[in-house]
Amino acid sequence: MSDRPVAAIILAAGQGTRMKSEKHKVLHPIAGKPMLHHLLDTVDSIGVERTVIVVGARREQIEASVEGRDVAIAVQEDQLGTGHAVAQAKAALEGFAGDILILYGDVPMVSARTMEDMIFRLNNGTDPRAVVLGFRPDNAGAYGRIIADDQGEIKKMVEFKDANDEERSVSLCNSGLMAARATDLFILLDQISNDNAAGEYYLPDIVMLPGQKSAVIEVDDPAEVAGVNSRAELAAVEGEWQRRRRNLAMADGVSLIAPETVFFSHDTEVSSDVVIEPNVIFGPGVSIASGTRIYGHSHIEGASIGANSNVGPFARLRPGAVMEEGSKVGNFVEMKKSTLGKGAKANHLTYLGDAEVGEGANIGAGTITCNYDGFFKYKTVIGKGAFIGSNSALVAPVTIGDGAIVAAGATLTKDVAADDLALVRPEQSVKTGWAKKFREAMMKKKRR
Picture 1 (cartoon, rainbow, N blue to C red):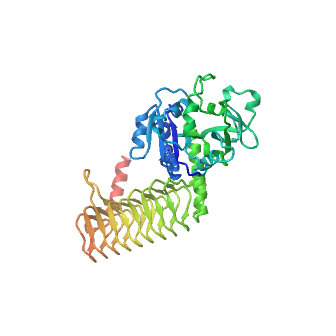
Picture 2 (picture 1 turned 90 degrees about the vertical axis):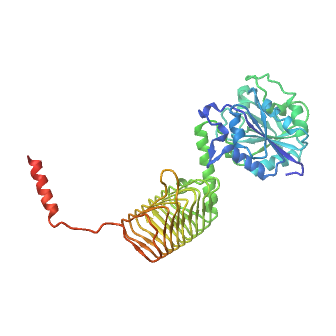
Picture 3 (picture 1 turned 30 degrees about the horizontal axis):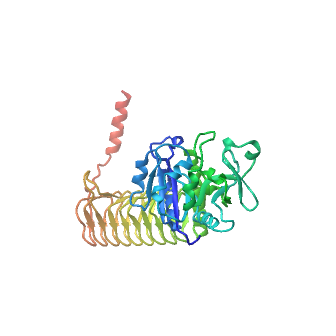
């Protein structure tokens, strides 16, 4: 990077018709975060001074999505090509005299390093008019081609539909990403025409204007410039993001038993020496401390999991779930807005909602905190070392004291003091021989 200020223009005016969605294309999520926001976060990380998003169709969705972020909005009313789209940012960048990155809202994986490399090349070497980001895909297909010399000086750029057979045989393709000086960019855009097969103003045409030469740099990994125009391409970019995140987790000391089956959120925090078994899905807002094991088929979102804890298999932790050090949540247990204290256990078939469970407490199989009356939510408090018997229904608001025992099968509607026993069930009675007489009577009736 140079000492010159940097601005970013992000193009997001396209119709996105191939997504077949009422949601704007660039707002579809990658790892739980809109792809536009992935790009904005990367742009922010390199310290840009100004960011302009060029919008068109469904502009109100983008405006609502970026509300509160330090970005400007420019509108492209008519879809007249990428060059025309970039030109719409001119007013928002009035008075800016630094370098400009031109990015695409549906190309969310480009890295901060690549952005910095583009700006560096713009200000070094042959002092190019513009820097184009090139890539070499396995199948060049209909991408525009870049013809350049060994020093990266561009001889020609041509759209596929306008290229001849020799030009189409070139493997270096145009990603569409570019860097240029603010003092040059809009002057150059005024000079391009729409005399081409599509009748559009192509941004790459500024490279071929007479005068100063432009340069190309190649991205190391073509996946960085993968665009999203369809649901299949969205899935492919999601897959690439997850592949990278899994590799990063394992490099940081996390054990993934079957990496390809684990799905992270954009903000998942996992410490070293965590083991994650197959088929685990993380939603946003999860942190996991060292020594924890996440058993298979668990779904975790908005949860904080302390050190040396166990989760699952088949567990669901919802937003507000807090597991303190050494606690355990077992199979078919769901937690929501609840805290499981240090060393506490809920091993089977339990729902803990709006609950506070003390250190060392044991929650028996089938226990439910009845936290909702159809209108309001209420809290259940279970003290340290308390024991809740199986198949108990704790009707909130209710408090169970430290060391108390709630016998199995209880429907609890009143508080239980510390070290007390709560029995809420009728006394068992037995009718000798009744079952045999009942069966004989039913069989006789059935034979009639």
